[in-house]
Every structure is written in C-alpha cells, then in structure tokens.
Length: 476
Image 1 (cartoon, rainbow, N blue to C red):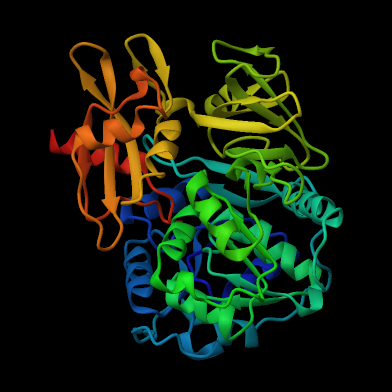
Image 2: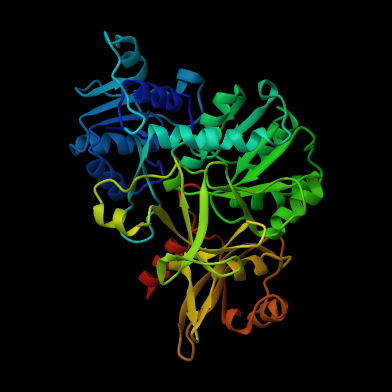
C-alpha cells in the first residue's frame, strides 16, 4: 500500500494511474488530517511509502511521520515541477529513504511483465469522515471505481451536453476525496475534457475562471455555492460560459439552488453518493417539473429502496420514512480490517447507508437526515437538516448547523448555530421562531440560538455537525 499525501497538483493523477497499472493499493491522506489521524491511517492501511509535496505544511508533517518511523520512504514532488503555486516550500533533505518525484520517475524501469490486476482487487482504501472514533477505510476495487465512472457516463448520455473536447471543468474539489476523484477527474479524463486544477477554493478565482477562462462545468459542494451566491460579484458576473453546475458531498440548501437558478437561468443540479458507493448514487434531472429538496433518481445500474429504521430487512412503501439502502457494482464490499462494522452495514445484500429518507410515488428520493443526527424531542423524531433548510430562507443567514441539546422537558431540543451574511444584523431567538412559525412544526422549533463567526467544516468543506458537537462537549 502506498499513501498519497498531496494537494491538487498533477502529481496526483500521475501517481494514481501509475499505482493502478502496477497493481499497487493506494490510500488517500488528507492535508487537513490531524497527526494522530494520519498515523492511524498509515498503520491501518499498512502504507510504508508516501508520495507528497515539498509545500511547507505538508512536507513538514511528512518529514515528521518519516522521522517517527511511520513510513520508510518519501517520494517528494517539487512545487515547481508543474509551475509554482506560490506557497512556501521546504528544502528536501539528502537522507536515505527520501527521493524527489522526478528522480524516482527518471530511475524507474518498466517491468518485463506488468502484474495481472483483477477487477476485484482493492485499488483504493478511501477513509470515511468518521464521526466517532477513528475513520473506516472503505475498500474500493478497480471494478467499483470504473463502474462508478460508467454509471455517470450512462446517466449523462441521455442528457443534453456540450462538446467534451471544448469543456473546461473547474477542479477545486480535493482529489483526496472520492467525489473529486471519480465524479470529476476520472470521468472528465475519459471524456477528454480540459480541467482547471485549483489547490484551494477562492470565490474570486472561481468567478475569474467563469469570466476569463470560460469554464463550462463547475462541480462544487454546498459551502462553495453558498459563498458564491452570497458574494458581491454574483449579481453581475458573466456566467454565460457555464453549461453545467453541480453540488454534492452534502445536502444543498433549497434557497441557494433557487437563487442560483434565478441568476444563471438553469438549474444547479445535485445528487447523493457516499465514499462507500465510489460515490455514485443518485442525480437530479435538469429537466421536467422540479422537486425541491430531492436528491434525485438512482443512477443507471443501481438499485435503491427504503427499509424500516428498526428492521433493515423490511422494505417500506413510497412516502414512508426509513433508512436508504443501495446495491450495485460500485458499492464497496466492506471496511478494511473491520469485519464487525462490515457485517453491520449490510442486510440481505443491500448496503445500509445510515441516511434517513423516503421515496415518492415517482421514484425520487429525499433525505431528511443522517440516522445518527436525528433528535428525539418529546418522543418525536426531529431531523436537523429539515430545520436547517427552513433557516436558510432567512435573508440574514449565511450558514447554519442545527444540533440536539439537552432539554429538561423534551429530553432533547433543537439549537441553531448561525453565521451571518456580510453586513447583516443579528436577530433574536424570538425573531427566528416567528420566521419559522409556518415552516417547521412545534416539536422542530429551535429553543436556542447562537451566532458564530465561523462554523466548523470537514476537510472537504462540508459543514461538520460532528466537530461542532465535539467542541461543545469538550467545553462542558
């Protein structure tokens, strides 16, 4: 197993395809991972070689891991290899076990015969976010990953699209995340499209990519779209080159999607998937009667249904809320070194997603929340995401997370943590409750409100309930 500890730079796809051809199993490490998480992933995956960059924070940590004996070899890409990023770098020491990427490539010789790679072989250990304890490594095979790309291709084949050779795709989503790897990089490479590779998201850079580089496709996550839609340039930016815009990784606020469509003239499409599904799952058609809040239809070749929360073997009819199940050629066979977690994640050959939702009469799926995030208030099931969607309609709100907090009467009740749009004024809990009166039920009404300068996010930019919950718990 070889670890990839890289930002968005060409070294990543070169290493990814080289390892796949050589039959080497890869593990992605996030540049935003804490040291203990990096150490855990390396040990759990059995990775003794690390491909990294000499960009300062990244390489400093890589040298530390090497010095601790957690890896035997560092292959270090130099920041200037493909044009400098402008970020500070560290010198590469002349030590045993440390080699530059260019020297490694120059000294490599093709084998007499390439290894025979089976479609069932694990190509990638992709660690999930992990809300409690350490993350789990989803085993993604060559078949899982290639099937996921083919599934997206089959869906898009039925939709109007531009000429792939002329498409310019903004790739700012981190390549260490499955959404960027499969849905964007691998799929766009198979299409022959140009990719604008960006190391970090910057709204002004993105608007420049629309206006100056005439980007045609932008896949993002909700926090990126929230930032763009609330940016001063959004009202006047030239979006005429853009033909397809997508959001994934987390539920997209309905209000943000509405504002984008009103400005751009076409729908900001969403979808749903998981690390464990490589990540193809559903997509929202960009035609027909809109269904606000839907995650869409299952992609071609996939089966999905709803099972009872208390019995994963019992299927529920349309309209009833339960847990979403999925099966298909893209779905992981389980978690690395975790047989018990693997066993608990399947029922009758279906993967249990942990997402609570329902299917309507037309076959469209809707997520109401994660199973582990559900609040039980006075005996009622309360879904934070539904409250968040309503709060996003407030004109002063930029971002929001709703958590369950102890309540002496109800057991648990909802509390809203809010960041404000630039220049917006704070409001009281009573103001918020009045705003939500006709939007949520009495059992869903927030009983507390807290304003924050910023809300915690995961390494891929998703708002993190888990981190906020941990922070509050640590503070007592």
